[in-house]
Length: 351
Image (tube, rainbow, N blue to C red; front, top):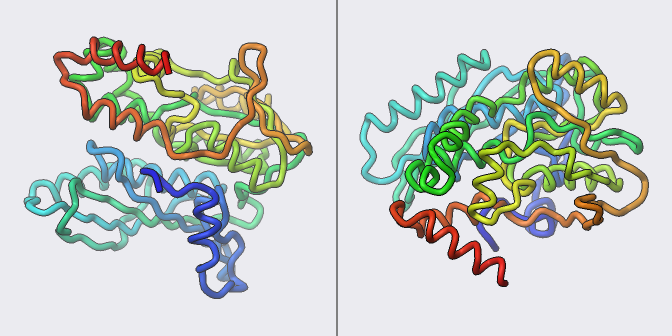
């Protein structure tokens, strides 16, 4: 198995058959593309999700809470509480633990949630710290939506653009290499993308206009998230590549590293299935959030991307371009970054 989250067929074969007893309280349970579950315990629904941070070295506590609350928001829920697990690599000191907690607290205050418990330890054999969050939210039955809730004829709206989180990770974790490859100005813009990670406002605005499904764009990027939405609903999908915003820092990085920005991790982007595409876009942009209708769902089985007059089949997500880019940058000496990137890009083109 490759680096990153398990592929769809691996989840269906190795994970989903072993989920214990199906409880009557479960409203949303384990399924491809469902990042949260929902339980009916009487009154408002309890919505839960869990996520580790393993691909980013900078500000891991803040990022872990942000992306977990994004998953809650994508169900229509309001985040309430956090359980935080911190696994510190061997040899860590008190300052490192304190820094992760201060980072996590900053996110909790920004999102108006409480860290109510968790677990902290030093763990042998870890090359880097791992921060894992279980987030708890609440939603009314009317507010709750699932990834599989898409309906034929729904338009697909994307907020902010492609590759947001991946761009921020590259620019923060490899500052010297990235600046050598794309320049200081674009690298600084890319670092600022960490402030775009939350989709909690995006989801609340869209929820109030009317949606059938929402999905936070994480591993697998825009195409992976859109595929999961269509697959979960048993529908087809057509996406127009020219409608998808790819910012200059993301474009420059992906060109330099020969990555596909539409397959790059993108927490901060929200995919929305709605019969009111224009109204959702207008409401988002009124609050300063970029958005665009990038496609539509239909009853036909095919999932396709229209690009440059060609139609390309959208395949199931297989890993994420983040890991390809990190492996490449780990091999690059910062002083030789531009030359090495050009050489390896040319070699890939020849392949």
